[in-house]
Image 1 (cartoon, rainbow, N blue to C red):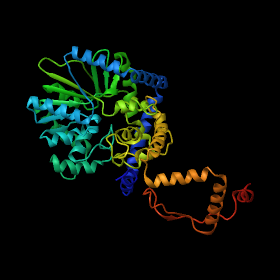
Image 2 (image 1 turned 90 degrees about the vertical axis):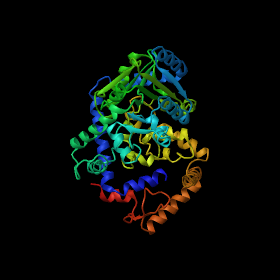
Image 3 (image 1 turned 30 degrees about the vertical axis):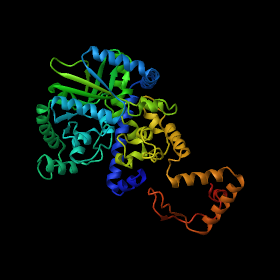
Image 4 (image 1 turned 180 degrees about the vertical axis):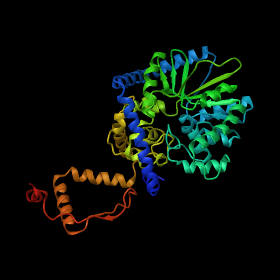
Length: 452
């Protein structure tokens, strides 16, 4: 199912679509208030973008520096070329420890690598400890948003889900009661699991440490009680020096949820006595994207989700319509790099309004990259057939003045004699509907008659 078909399915529930749209726009407004309260906001954005530009230009150097310092801290460093290698490394660590149950905090990289189903197939139980992630895990769904994984769920639906899986009272939809039930359910998991897996928000080349940002403290709870900490990190997460963290930590939460900073910004430098700490540095197409001059800036992304919250298409189509771990505008840039054929529809799921680029805390030119992907996909034969035919027809019309004028005459003739009917069966965004008959008079005649 491509994006437009999945979006059409999401839009059949009008109330949910409207609520989803309004909720995300409310988050966008919170972001604006938080950003505009800081006089140096644009300076922070420019600085963050420049730091990331430096990182991408010297990525190999910073990665080697990070590995050297992390190893000196007592951390075991692994390298994974792709998702398969990443998953195999995690499994090998678990098998060395004889472990079949783990707790995991939010990690979009592991979603990208499909780690959970891989481990399940190999007899390992994974418990997601982020509340939103746990909700979608109980529902057997992937996250629909990188910051708010269950934003598409209503509290009444969560109540039904928790009644089934956690034994909460039937009909209970009180958020405090449901959160307490989840807390009690997860506490036992934290206390009994010997391995905790986390993502990485930032890694510091200078010190070999890494930072995990959460609002629930679940990453800290899991890692501090576990004998083994596995951290999974995309190679683009590097920053050169510890002092640079202040720039990104001020931008991240404000862009994501409108908070001044995440509740927990936890620094991990070395394992405590008796604990093992592993970090897996994952490429999975990032080097290929780095080599694409038009798209390399997408690797600056700090996964705040601001582009999703502002995007009019994402807000009214839902995250699952993007059939990719990272949805929305930034996901539509990253996904074709992984698989052009499978994800050829996603760069077209945009109005190119530029709102995503305007809110991006690291100033990624998202809408321009989406437009560039459309050109690449069309030239390489990966764009949808109907869209390719339509674009070729448009190019033929616009490149010939005589054909253009003739088409205009046909269009005027058609509109003057028949009701205007929108009937595009190839695009599920539209349904056939009759519109009022257009006026016979020209705009100039109407203006002369109606002007005061």
